[in-house]
Image (cartoon, rainbow, N blue to C red):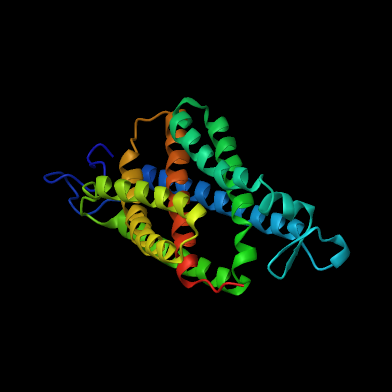
Length: 257
């Protein structure tokens, strides 16, 4: 392993100059993807469970409507009452907390915090089942999974240095966040379309960029605690890329109720 650079390629002039697979790196990246996948599963199950608790087909059990959908007390509290703003912004607050505090946590604490964030995200995303047809949600999810897989694989295997993309993508991400928050109050279809198109491009780029960056974070000499926190931080970055790419594609291609 000492003869490999930080991207997993053999150094020139060393025996075996062809691409060499670093088992430690493979194990580390597999851990990252496993954490990300578990996070997505928690989010998906939480969204479905909250949606099931929020709607009813029985008129006498309903306390409010969302279009043609009858809402239970749970649905009214989460999607209509002022608490909806807490539901909307809680995941954003949590991700900022994780970004600043994760490196100071134990591996177990970081895992629990990541699972809690995935749960909050699921509660927040449950509202998409009120807006889009369930078939289009499933279709866009599989499109997202295929696109994410291809982009992440390219980011992992490419010899091109993607670090120059970083500043541009981060500035674009900040712009997308600001525009999305503003559009929560403006509800402008034109602005939503522009944000969605730019968002797809930005999160597609971030998927490849983050994969390469996470790969370069690997260091053979890291202890178990450091390696564990790096894997969770990497999973958080890829999880956010996947979720946001999914939401941007859903806004563009999802069929509304």
